[in-house]
Image (cartoon, rainbow, N blue to C red; front, side, top):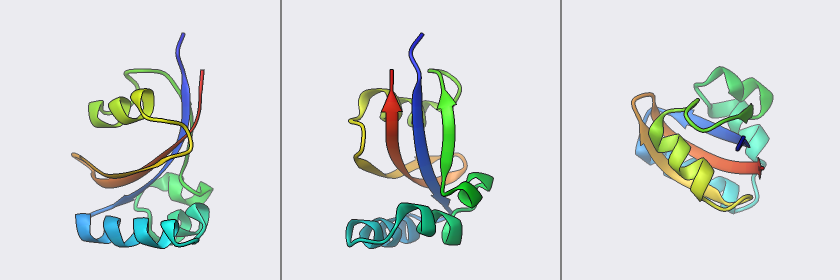
Length: 92
């Protein structure tokens, strides 16, 4: 069965998401940005979502996780929860 591992940062506005994406692209640690800004409980773990299978996450997330490249920072991705930055850390 297919699986993926990923980490994400959840915020309430696209503007904040874009700002945080720029910080990470300019060298800020994904983990520290997640710990300081993510509204998801996973933020305490640096945004780590662990291992999951297709269909376990919302469709917008699934599409990015299972079709995007590993190690690339994606976002903003809008879901009913808010705006996400997403990085696929593994897939098999």
